[in-house]
Length: 341
Ligand code: DAH
Image (tube, rainbow, N blue to C red; front, top):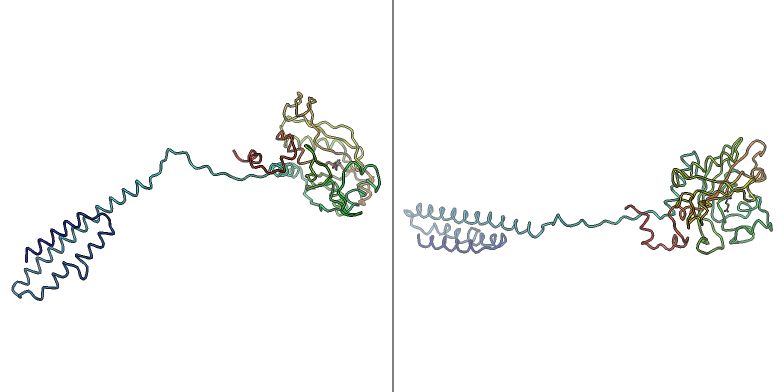
């Protein structure tokens, strides 16, 4: 009997020692200690043992059972440790490696500039009004003192949809739409897409403008200059200056062209400003009395200032973009330059 027990223990020791994984261990444990296992089988044989030897037999088999269980327990702990160390090795992270770069998207430069312009004017109390892109000839031209067949129409190459409907050539019709509905004081900004049959390095058939309009009692060119000075300092550098030059627009009288000191050379003269130190940024003026009257506003009581700014032009000046077409090609190598660094 003892020989049988010793043999079983020896075999168990050998087999447990040869185990390679926790899974193998579980199978082997069943072979020895499971319901139909070898040790269990010995215990079941108790009934065939003569009663006087039964107590000793029982003791021997129980000791064996404990020894075999201890063997498995010991091995299980050792295997677990081994397997843990192996997994640490396998999943090890080299903390000296560079991290993976996460690339962020970013706003299109035109949207960056548009938002910045709107923010600057909202800070000065302007409200945003958006007019339609498909516009009646009346709002786009006639109400702005550009009658049908008038030579001033040649200033803008218009896409006509029909005799009375056009793709708006500027955001100025927004002025009329607001003045028709609202009584002064008025202080609005009207951003949006505009269209002209024009296509070269500095013109695109579709581009963006932002219109500004202030109507109140006693508005003068000084107010215009003050507002624009504040704006260019927010948009460009703190030391940026503006200069007004006489110009002509049918909807303003007087009309001016507004220049800013060159953002590249700060007024010294460079390639970007063609050596003049100044860059033209927008058209503006005092709202023509006829336009106020067309909108039912008493031009003896009220006066207004207006300006129209090209977003593409402002973007090109701000970032030194030489060709307007790069703004629409959507080449990510170009667009990425405006993202977070
Ligand atoms: N609408 C003009 C254009 O597209 C720009 C402009 C000039 C707007 C003078 C104005 C203004 O409001 O007063 O060329």
